[in-house]
Image (cartoon, rainbow, N blue to C red; front, side, top):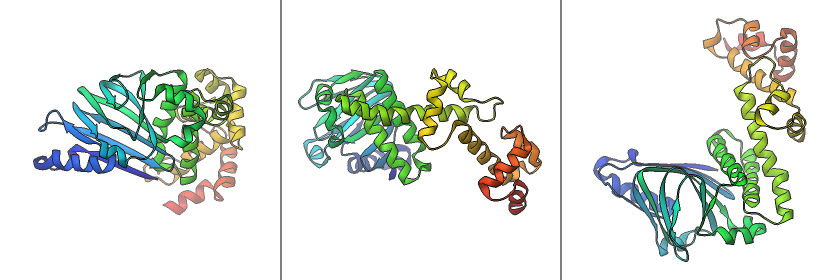
Length: 317
């Protein structure tokens, strides 16, 4: 996997437009034309994985042109444009001009020439590119939205939310974990496109569960040291059933309780090795990490790390 960053501010002001346009043309196969050559800004971060590309971009008023020659160099992918703020327009060969704004998704056949206009003060969006071969089970739904905008249904919102989280977390994911996430995004795309019953069931079985599990884990992180953190409380906050929340972890080969304990132990381990917390004793660190039973904390810590908390601290300091 590769993470690429293209930022206009990284180029010398004297030749910013020319140098920036050359890099953009080579990396994204478009000709970038800013409205204001003296004071434009553009930032794009692109995560490239086998079977998936996820990008986040923010641009001042400008135009991106994919020429016939650029299109010929593009792979057979479909790019889903999902505006987050601002607005613009897009016009591709074989389609009509479509308005881009938050609440809509546009399906872009990547090998077709076109013009994308970033309007107003800025436009910010998420871009998800998937090889067409992975969208085969949803061929009818895909054909219906190619070169068109469609409303962000709940299914599309799940797709967007998961893709954004993957884009943010990719730098800390192991390659095998990233590969699993790629499959989840592909499955959520199939579901959003209204795939065949069999494909939709596959998506619900993998991608939807993965998206829900991400939500649950994010809520756990937000409440990790809160006394009384429980599957029932997390489920109520997210509008899920406690049984469903527990089943999500069971499918991962663990339990809600064990996952929370592992995250709290990891926090305690970091604190024990961080000089900033040297003034706290081990009981205080256990409390800070959400443990109410010191003996249970010590036993679980040693079981997990093969050392006592005291040994870890002595080894560090």
